[in-house]
Image 1 (cartoon, rainbow, N blue to C red):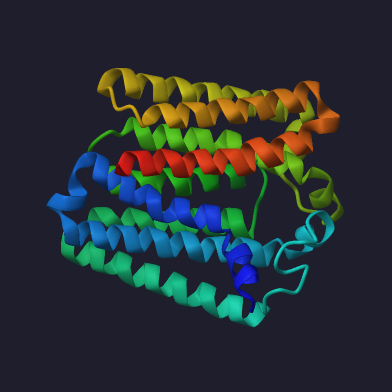
Image 2: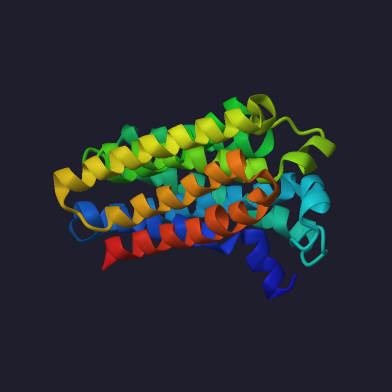
Length: 271
């Protein structure tokens, strides 16, 4: 397995978000320094789970990627499938063990995290339709929820709604490849207009919630997430108005710039 292949199959931007997200949220609520052991377990639980399900997603989407993105790690044979399966199983087991430790030390409330594994499996390994997308954002929302509870409960909701809009946009880019691979996705169910409209509505709602959080708290890093929502709104508009150029806009605004802005947002919450 080459280093480049390893970074590709691990989806480095999403891996960084999975690490920086819980760190930043714990720093925001002050728990990172007041409850270091609990914070340590939470960060490792979420980071290992995020990494594991990223790998599983790549394993499961090999057929679609071979059609649409042959440069990715599996289609271009930069990684060995058996090694990635072992990595997935080790990381998943580590996350489950860490979750059990969280429950043992800090209470049964943290058993909620097991539900996040179930919804992650439904999306990454079973369904990519509307129900699957709802499961994906449930996973995101629960991860942020267990980190921040009982403070700033609007933030997990805002991030989950944002991710729903972003996921629809990114799935639209893979629409034709997933049709060929006979994978039913939400954009196939909604159509071009429906996908753009639902994603735009979700992003407006997320943006509104984030603006409310900023106005109530004065916490300036939230503004970076507002900009992230706006970047994704541009993608929704491109699907509606500039269909022939939508793929380029989605790749650069939703996937690259959007993920970069999320990383910058979480870094700003740290510093």
